[in-house]
Image 1 (cartoon, rainbow, N blue to C red):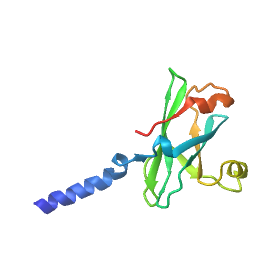
Image 2: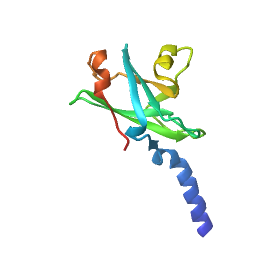
Image 3: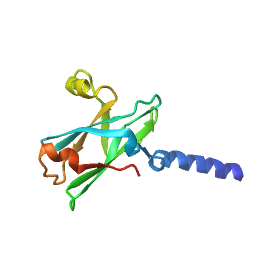
Length: 135
């Protein structure tokens, strides 16, 4: 009977594993570098501390109309793990994003966030309206 319960718990934890164990980078270990607004998308460049077995697969975000701001959480996962996220991040391509690479160096991620909310802010002030959350 114990073995059946143990096997059931392992199976259930495997199904929900990634959803419940989502880790986020602490605010002190990540930095928003640049934000651009192109058509209906926000392009956010951010950096994390270099790690050997962890990376940032994406972000979760929430728009608040009251402050006209975007709150984001930057996911931190082991390299072989796949988790759900709202917007996928990619490490920058040195050829496509050579100016960003020259400006900020390596370990920079790029994420496209659909701007399907009313973030009506001039591009020069966008970075001031994006806040990092780590919990």
